[in-house]
Image (cartoon, rainbow, N blue to C red; front, side, top):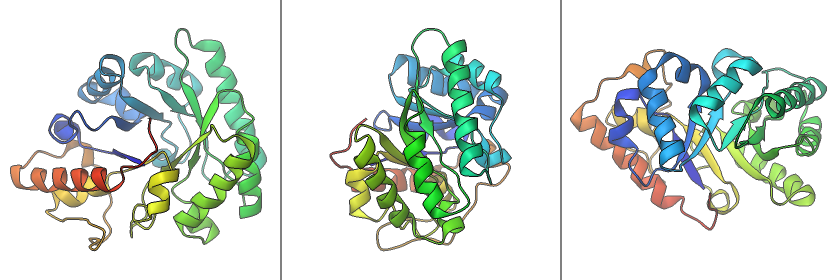
Length: 262
């Protein structure tokens, strides 16, 4: 399993060394922050890193419009794009939105087509798992994204949901991959060796944010919950906390190494 670290712009070059090749980036930040955009465009286009373009649904409640998503794809040339989703969607609404987004991108993109990440939503867990199965039928979907709020909504631990989704993927399309959007506060999934070998990746600002507070996160020690905050991307580097953040990144990079590759 690989970890995409959500990182302040001025710390990107310091914290994300050449061994960090898995990234998730925010579409709106690409639009508003030229340094952020240029860093990830270079990593994607020149260095060949695996860059996932997120659709901002977590930040805004609903994803950015299809046209803006297509324009951002042209700038970054990501390996994968999160199809449109909206918090609170029913299964039918979720599938309709994702299919419409995929069709728009197929029609309007030229050159290399990124693969798509479908993010299921539903009102109950049985419908959610059915949505996973139907999502994989949308042309171009090569990854299922497990939403950050699924554990809270359905009352299950992240590792349980990941296993259930993995079972559906294996029964229908074993080539499809799984990415867990966001980390739980206890790092329950991150500490699960099963996930290291079965989940392609996850993303979070937690390990960096803790480091910027001088806190270390390990298998044995989980710091108190933290949130990014509205000014997170504008954090100014500090030599001591930057070392702590880099230590968190390196520790978990080695811990999560497995047979799963991208």
